[in-house]
Image (cartoon, rainbow, N blue to C red):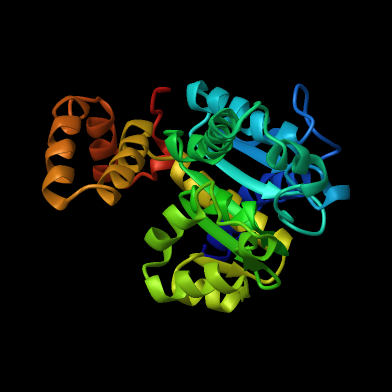
Length: 310
């Protein structure tokens, strides 16, 4: 009898494991950018999970002009996609990203339009605000975003990952606030979000003022990432498993949790509690609570609960 039970359990685990392995391999072997994008590859490796891959591997996923607008378009679509409950962001090729593509962006940044200082400054400010929205759109997206970093994560890459909700990396990952080395202060999110992510002003100041590399062990110890994996395949598998766990929960609960976590980060405890009370005075009326409670009483997994789309 015991042998039969063990064999049955093995068969069940094998059935659930094989699709996961296939999904990991598919995520690691995207053919190219996905239309209408030229810098991103978008796929759906599992139920309710969207994978957004930075896809300029020949340029080390450097962020060119197209990237800055395509990320906004992509995450605007994801925010409205009721089939998506979780997003995974990763990079194709050997590194996550080398940061801004200076060869493509230099002219636009160093020679702003305008025939006097006021007009050039006005146009440059508008351009910077546009680029800031590229990563703010990730933070604004109600779906949790899990970012998986391997190899280099430089400059704009740090801006990107600090706007995500959960950060994972490989042992060979390293991070650099590069902007000070090219004569400017980081202006699209790192200086605003990194202090809230790490919590150590001294360390943030050191990284931002020296441009030194931070490696995976230090990134884990300071809280920049929550988990470190031996290699990219293991990390993608971990990200997919994590996304599956999140996607299995009520989307009302998950998206409400993300929105209130971000609100509370930027407000006092009293303001956060007041916002939460206002939020839940309607959200507590969802049928998802009864479904979740019933599943718990029946000792069922959240994955067995048929939550409606949101």
